[in-house]
Amino acid sequence: MLEYGIGSTEVKTEVSESISEIPQNRTLMIEKLTKDAPPSPEIVQNLTNIQDVFKKFNPSIEVEFEDSEGALQSEKMLFGNLEDFGVKGITRQSEFLKSLDEQKAQFYQIVKQLKKNKLLRKALSQKETKEALLTAIYSMIKELDQNI
Image (cartoon, rainbow, N blue to C red; front, side):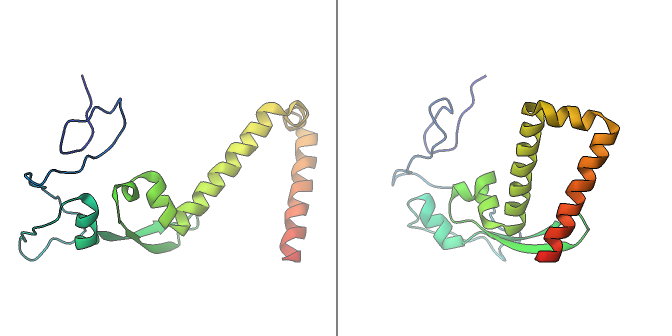
């Protein structure tokens, strides 16, 4: 089964995900890009490309994120092009998601270190050395908290 990308002409995704400019003799149908429905349907003419559509309608949405302690954080997402709907586009706009992405990167680094570092794996496999290592880490965290 072939998969196709979005566009005014058929674009196979094997080539690349792209959107061709819509010729002047075509009609562009737009779906709802915001949370609220418009009060009445609106016909808009002379929008010749995707950028014009985004400039005209300025799609956005309020999003609430919940952190690990249960606190809610509200952020407004703005969409100026199709890239803004992807993971990178949404993460780029959100401080909350940026911090989660940084945490994820740090966790991957830790896992990478655990896989590579034989001494650390050996230390963590024995109960006494594991407890000593955790005690050292907790004391470093405490010292950093006091100095900040």
